[in-house]
Image (cartoon, rainbow, N blue to C red; front, side, top):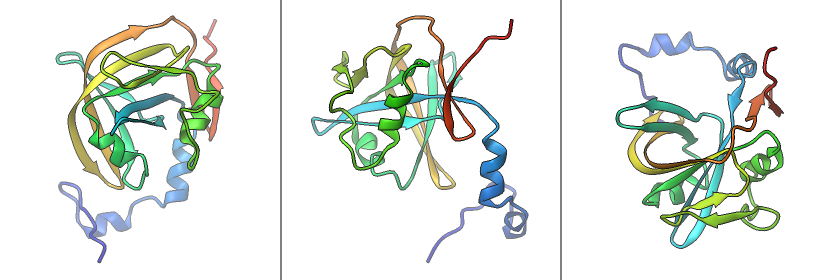
Length: 177
């Protein structure tokens, strides 16, 4: 039996009014999102996934968040890790983003370049920034899990241009003159 989780103040009739999945995807495709790769070490094995749902949450305490699909095969390993790293990708790292989004591949094999971070989570080379995070909160929301992390360390590698995800493709930011 599948359970439908109703949001606060909503009833089953409200869900009948919800936009269908295809319409929802088309509408959100016009929103550009930054691209990160979340990495961790779980059971001594490096794991990671691409996320476009990354966001800052709070300055005090310093919190960030991302969402992961409940059906993700990487999520159980990430969930078990005692910390994780957010690797903010630079505009020339579309291949790296695609690699970490792909299923059934060794994401950390060549040509991926990485090193262990201060607590052991893999840090990808040549990214714009690294954030080291401790799990702060996890909340099931729809078919995803909201993961909130407490940032314990940050390293900005350079002011380079970010990698963006827009209309199903990776792209680059061009500043308005």
